[in-house]
Length: 254
Ligand code: IPD
Ligand code: CA
Ligand code: CA
Image (tube, rainbow, N blue to C red):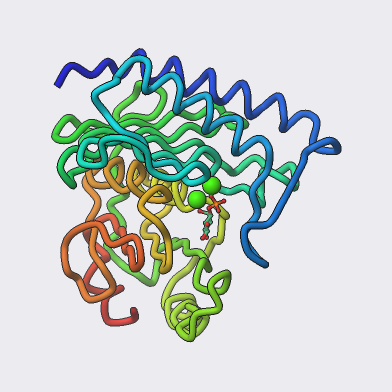
């Protein structure tokens, strides 16, 4: 596979600069709603359009699936892109949002990058080659006791008015842990597990573009990747990522 992580990083950082231009002028930011609880801004559209153009220029053999523009060309070998993961946070001037880019070849994620421009943190992984943050190797935490753990989650299920709204599950896990966080970007949540800053993350009702890159980064950092029943693999609709040591203790609470 003739892939240049350096070239991809250059383009993602350029996309980050585009996002930061909008981020520094939020009073003028055009915001619309895809559904009552799902925002999209002109920054999302501009970042995705830039990445679509650049990735197709450098890698014309691959198709594209972006959250805002949909699917185009080859869908068996494709880029899977969330231009701004954490749009609501972005629109409020918060720093925790990221650009997520993954390459999926025949249903396997082989490259993933998540860039947080406001934090200037760049996470990257290639299948079988480890996980990196700002060009330094990263790995999951060594916390083996759920009672000492910090977990994070999200509530996409509330956005989708699901019956299983994660609130009872959150209460069960919150009572069993020391720290609980809701950061607002699933892509970055996954990177924090990879970096050992959080010990486990779970969420329902996500899409492949939210999690494809972050899940590979977490796996390459030594994390476990399952659904809520412990089936191994990437299930965007029911994702559970842990440092590996906490998986069994969390499964009984899911
Ligand atoms: C959202 C973030 C959030 C998650 C939502 C996602 P978006 O992505 O990842 O953490 O809870 O379900 O939709 O919409 O800002 O790209
Ligand atoms: Ca997203
Ligand atoms: Ca998004």
